[in-house]
Length: 378
Image (cartoon, rainbow, N blue to C red):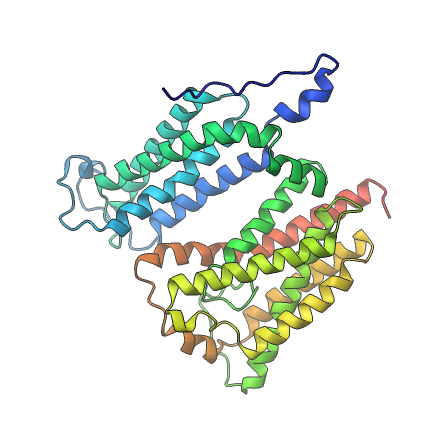
């Protein structure tokens, strides 16, 4: 019989409450990620958020409607897998106040309420169809994710490799956890093939964009090279500001770059044809990647205050440039091969996160700099 009870943990006789407090406190990262996941789930479920209308029926009419005639395994899998992180993060956010069966029950119950509400809201969107089977899949996914978290989360938050790596590599504090979440969201933005390499802050999909005049190919290569290099250096400097003194910052930044490139390759391999998996490796991307890697390895050796300032300036300059530059015809030609299909909502989500990420990162860098100044550090 499965036991979701507390994980035994014996406190040594010589330990004090102060010594054991770091092992049992709540995880700010888990709570931040859970809140973000709820918001992003709602956005993805209601995307593209246009054409709202009242059809004259109850928003809960879908509950007793017949199951859809055409059901694909892809749709079932997406609804199941989409709510597994919800259940997992919910249990992680409740740790250590609520654990075991109670945490699993809260995660499953809240997922059911959220799914029912979002499906009801979909009834008012012409591009979406409210389906009762989706609610069942969402509930099953959340329950499965919560059950997994009930076993692994207590160990991870107490003495697991995640907790040890977080404590050893990065500075303590909730504000540092927020920065780590921002870095994770930057990796998430690389899943959208419609953006330039490492670029973020493009608001032209959210507001009416005006087409610019024709430019030579070298102009677009230069824009992409600068935006890729500037964002890469900015993110690398952000990571260096979160790292504990004495840690191998250059290795951490190199690992982050490798993960970002792996995410980009994985996105193109899934969303586009196999022969176009490296379509993002344009001349501008190559120059920007090379310049950014060389620059960031030297930039992380600067004083912390200078790193924060340079990161903010580079991210701001790249954001302004990516919004002022005319559409890249090479990117448009590449995206003709992109059939969004089932990934329409997911790509809308990654586009939104990419558009807002640069501004959130700028605000965070300003906050870190102000905290540094208030503390009287050089």
